[in-house]
Image 1 (cartoon, rainbow, N blue to C red):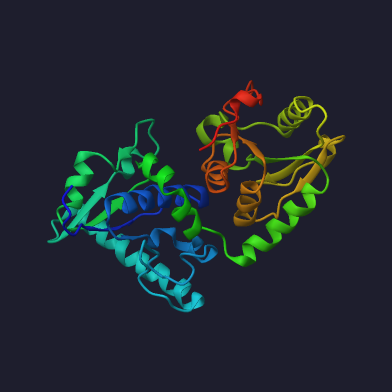
Image 2: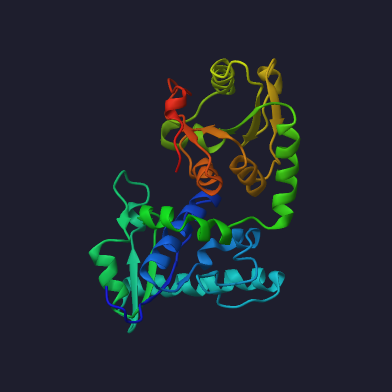
Length: 299
């Protein structure tokens, strides 16, 4: 790539819930640092106030902020700015707008197809066009950039103190109860229907996985930090050392990122916790999944 000024990239569509938004952000952030362009991410939207790097910036600029203003005013402004950018993106899908190029892959978001590679020649050529680039869709990726620039990305996306404090208190107390802290992400509400329930597991199956983990760690007192999408019957976990997470998404996410290990179904939620905290993750892809040590991998 040339050393000339690059296009400005503004993410112009929202991608699912918290875990999806964070991973979408991280792929573009890593790519922005690797390729040397300015990124704006108003699509972080209703979650932006939860993170140190974005709480005061209504356009969520990276690596340079757009504005540094009062967090409450930034939050109030963010949806208006996102709505305008989103409308611009929609307009650019149907008409040629000078200086603007939309990259709309939303039709592929729910398909079992590969990601759009942000390191590929097509996107690099668009960066050199010096236009305003408006990506719309979920499946953009730069895995290498995410890994290489993990420190800068996670620093920007560190939760604000009001999120960190309750999560860290729970984790600190949990660690006093044992030697190994395992985060358990139990996602049941939407997974009962999503993809015909392929990754929906009854609570009893999660109990079996936690017991298996205890048995695989003889001589250690294993404590399980449970972050669940809906209320659980805790009596099913009798005989296990159990601690509940903060009980709200951002807090649960931070708590999971502070564990020694994480288990959970395929989900960007536990995937982000693993990435942010550098915590080995065992993805429970089906009912027969094993929680053996060989199945825990880093992001």
